Image (cartoon, rainbow, N blue to C red; front, side):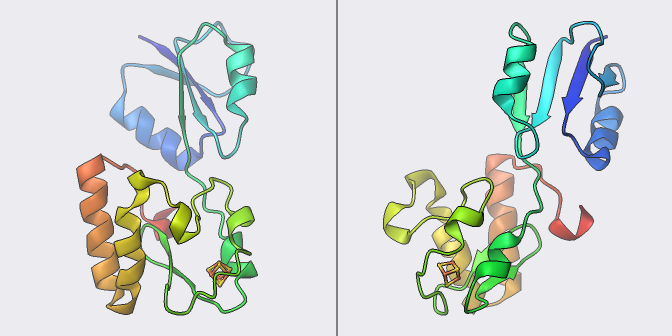
Length: 156
Ligand code: SF4
């Protein structure tokens, strides 16, 4: 049995992990014996702090944030909520850049600075002008291809 320390992990995800890994012990408090693995939501806790506290323990970082402050700052209301992602309507966006610093996981880029690995999301955002069904289908396809495990936004 491994001891897994959860840092900043929501109850929903803790329940999922416990169901998936019933043979392991999950802890959320500091001060236990050194864990075998640390799982941290790096949108909620600083991974450097965790690494400093447990320098010899493998750290698995992920993000499960539901921050939507980008929507609040958009002056033309062109950021929309699909099933598993937020999408920017490229026809309505005025490229003001107000949303970029609001994103806690730096997921918004000017089109000419988009890292190559996120290229599929150009098509996903453009699909907003077809329908949410198309957006959601493209996201599901991307998630299956890349083994993305995040739950739909309305179930968090
Ligand atoms: S860059 Fe586009 S999506 Fe972002 S806040 Fe400005 S108009 Fe809205």
